[in-house]
Length: 196
Image (cartoon, rainbow, N blue to C red; front, side, top):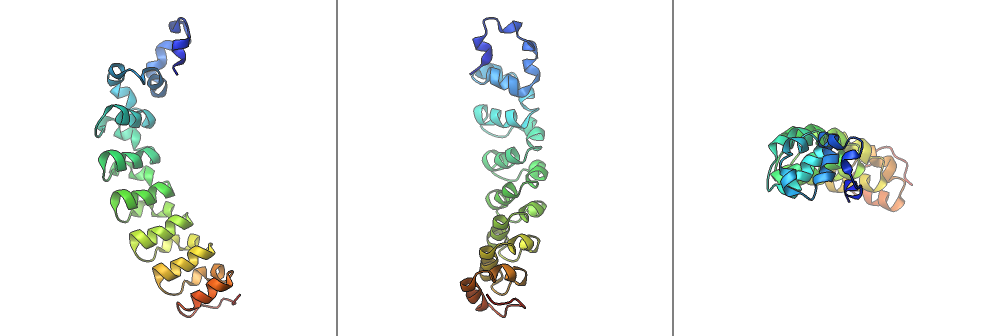
C-alpha cells in the first residue's frame, strides 16, 4: 500500500520531493511501476535491500552497480551469491563471514567446500561447527570444538562420526548421559572423566 495514494494532494506532504533520495521510500513509491523503477538503478544500488529487491523484481542476472551495497549485508550477499551469481561473491564474503548460519550455508551451498574467512563465526554454533566438520571438512574442526564440547549429543556424534575416536574436550558433556558414555567408551579409551 502506498500512503501517498491515500492523500488527496501528496505534493503537500513533508519531504514529498525527497522520496527519491531515500532508496527504501522510493522503492515503496515505485514498486509497482516498472518504467519508474528502471529509471532509478543508481538509487537502488545505494541500499542492499533495494538493490536485491530490484534484482529479483526486474533483472535476470547480476547487478554490478548494486554489488558494493549488497556486499555490506551478510544476508543479501549470501542470497546474491546463491541465487543470482550461482557462485562465489568475493566482494560480499567479509559480510557473510560475520554470521555463523550464512557462513556455513555459503560453504555448503555456494563454495561446496571450506570457507576459512567464515570459520570464526561458524565456530560459535554447536550445530554449524559439527556439520561443518562432518560435511565440509570431513575431519576435525578445532576452532569449533569448544562449542561442540558444551553439548552432550554433538560431543558424542563428533567423536563417533568425525574423529572416529575419543574427544577428550567433550567427555565431561558426554559423561552426563550414562548410555551415551557407555557407547562412547567403545570408540577408544576415554580420558580422566568420572563415569556416570
